[in-house]
Amino acid sequence: MAETIFQSEEASTNETILVIDDDTDILELLKISLTSDGFQVITANNGLTGLQLAKDDQPDLILLDVMMPQMDGLEVIGKLKEDNETNSIPVLWITARTQTEDKLVGLELGGDDYITKPFDLREVTARINTVLGRTRPVKYINPLINAMGEGFTEAGVAELGSHLQAAAEIQERLLPEKPPTIPGYDFATMFRSSTSVSGDFYDFIPLGESRLGVVLGDVKGHGIPAALLMVMIQTASRLLSNEADSPATILKRINTLLFHNTDLEQFATMVYGILDIRTGAFTYSNGGHCPPIHFINGTNNNDESSKDRYQVDLLNTGGMLIGAFDIATFSSATCQLSHGDVLMLYTDGVTETEGKTPNEFYGEERLIERMSEKLNCSAEGLCDALQTDLMEYSGTTQLKDDRAVVVIKRIEE
Image (cartoon, rainbow, N blue to C red; front, top):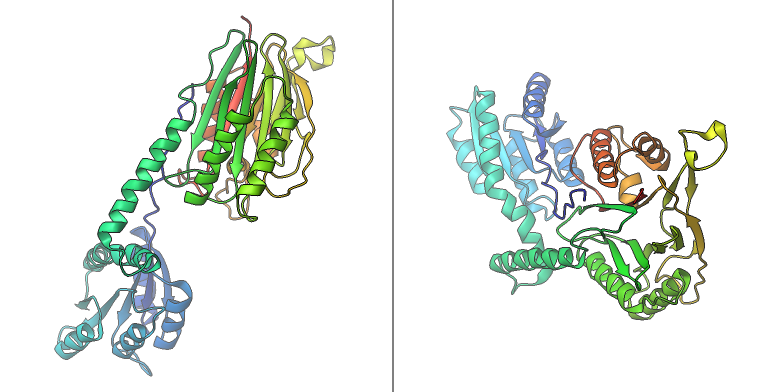
């Protein structure tokens, strides 16, 4: 079984620093230095522009020169602290050694710390990190406390965090502990969550001695609402599955349940398939989901031109989104898994992975191309190869969306 990862990715350390200084040489020097230290840096060469950037970009910290024409740094601090949109942004100002009064006034106005000229770039970075270390809890916890009400405290936030962790553990236990072990088939899964809890899910449901239900889905959105709906759908798919029913019938039942018991804005996409273990027939219905990919082993037919090549069939047959419409129709279709064939089910967190170039995405075409090169691998090897390629394509391990993958390969018994 490929590694199943159920955790939130480590947050990016690239915090944004706004540098305000009328000296363009100092601006460029600080930008180069702080960028090399891992910060995102934006600059302004006067106080008015700096105030506007602070409101628009909401930086994590402002590095501010005191001595500027028209509007000096102390006036800028005062205006920042008077504005509800900017008053929580920490300010680190730069002043001359002899300007003791500026240091005191800056602190009284609400500034967080100061640096004296001439400054050492290492000291600038150290002071920034010290201030950010103090203000991060304010930035991230206080808005949550405000949203939850006056009675909600930092202790309450900590308790909420422990509840989220418990929810993540419960949700993880709802997923199959490991893929099925069935003679003649090789199963593997890959699962990664972009937050503590996930809206993606997969499942394997025994349907008598010779049939296996295979489910994979994706709930709209992220976080707690998506996770709650995910649990509801996964539970429903287990309770509503019946050996005698078609996948289309099961999706229709799940759709009806969701439509009448959830908000109109909540819906999901999913694939429900039934694998006949004896024959390799996979009968499925697709509820608005990414089409599973059937890699057909060309060596199983008599066409010499297709030897050693795989053909591809996309499993689109199905119907509408799950839970979006009361009157929804679904249909079923069947594909045949022969020896050497591979079936891959996946969520859009795979194909919508953003590349190193903004607005360029992994896509279905690349997925097919990359997996076609690895079809001699085991099911677990295919999952591992996909995970590696996604990381290389994006250049990061941080996820913007959940990912779930199920791979079924038919092998010789």
